[in-house]
Length: 368
Image (cartoon, rainbow, N blue to C red; front, top):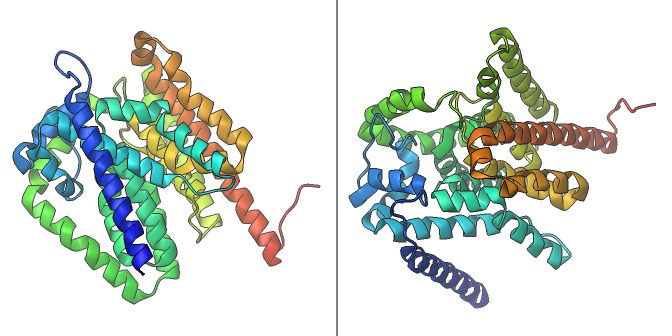
């Protein structure tokens, strides 16, 4: 017991030291007249002074319940809070990598994730993508262990970007109904209803204005929108019914795979659901590729070096691009990467289900 306490104390002290180092280092970085921390500058203004303010244009669009833990960052200088956010993000990414043997392969997995283009882009912009990763990890842990508090906290955190976890939460709800007791359904529902309802009473109206006002018109189908529908619409010549059929196909296949492979919740399945959510979302940005990478691609890399390595190369290719290429083509590119990841992970989820059925003695149609 004493050794466990000492171990946890050392871990907490180490994490605190990392956050302080990040805060001190980022305070030295000039952010005037450049694009560094361009997202965090906007977010920080909205929580400055420890309060939460929404504006109809160019402000926060995240739900109020997921922002409450971030309010203390508004009491700190912009650059210091940016550093703390970056430090928390790196710690989440490190914790997200599944522990495997041999150890060098595990540490290499961490390195490849932390220095990947989506990770560095997230840090440079001051985005909150890592919080989605942390929330999803808590959801997966809570579901597998039937730890209600972990699921509740995970959902409240992961929904900071609702468009990324829509299908994951729908499938989670189905699996919970199929495998948990009505008593646990009720506990889970009450655990979510309280903080969500109170936060909506507090800032719900202004959040909806920010979400569906000028911001929605500005960003939806814009040059930075990586959702499948937006990418197809930007071509300008694809009929609306084809775009609708594509949307229905992605949604239908994703839900079919989730039903066929019920009720397990692997990292690869979670990655598929996040990728599918991004493809069918009304709006999604390139930062969200980090969640697909951390939740789905890295575990895939550890179990299948060829497929995982292929996807990892794709997510890092933008390091070689010019600023003009990034501006003009990055959204199209991320849509393709997310689609390929979704397709690969969906196929693997179906294959894993077929193998499980074969082991359990259920007839499986095998190729002749």
